[in-house]
Amino acid sequence: MKNNIKNMFDSICNEYDFINDIITFRMHRIWKNDIKKLVHVLKPKKILDVATGTADIAIALNDVNDCKIIGIDISSKMLEVGNKKLKNLNSNHNTILELGNAEKLKYVDNFFDVITIGYGVRNFINLKKSLDEIYRVLKFDGSLIILETSTPSNYIFKSIYLIYTKFYVRLIGWIFSKNFFAYSYLQHSASKFPCGVDFINILKSSGFKAISSNVKFFGASTIYIAKK
Image (tube, rainbow, N blue to C red; front, side, top):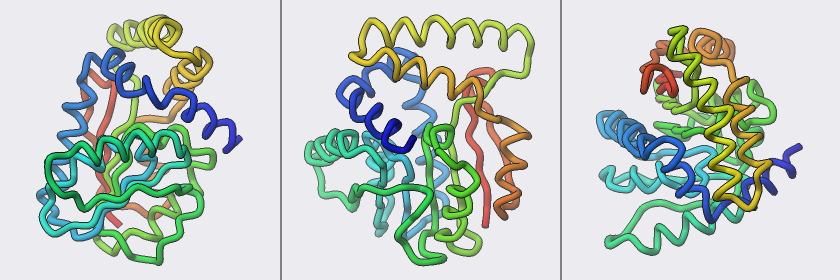
């Protein structure tokens, strides 16, 4: 299963950012900037961006003062795209990208001040094991910030959202991607992912506390903030 996920993301690495812009009407960039604002207030020295993909969040956090940022992903091809972005920055950066699996992080206990995840949690093969690992490497009183898809609670918005994700997302994937299956999978994983209170309870089961959530675009995405 891990290799299937890796190969899927390898196959869509070049069009991934472009299609994300189309699917979210570029709003994902605004929400990732919201994560940046939250992180700046915390003034961390070490940040881990899990499932970094093409490194949008890791790069956005590059201007956090005196901070080392590590972005990890299982897809080497996605990291290649991220590294190209880093090379195109007009200034020096404190960000490095590495192959890594959330289920088995190589870092020591209590190492990172902040851990971020943008649209990656729903693709964890073993969600609980991955969250337990993230909890382990996060410092005491450190912060976990997650941006993930969710389903609107309002019946009308939920109906529109389900139609949108089922047809529009797949259509965009079919038109612009070499791998239509990948966007069918991503749509399916988004629709099945436990959101809201259900996901908060999963975070609590891994030891996280002081959990809050901030819904975006009528509940189509949510930012979760948790402390260790």
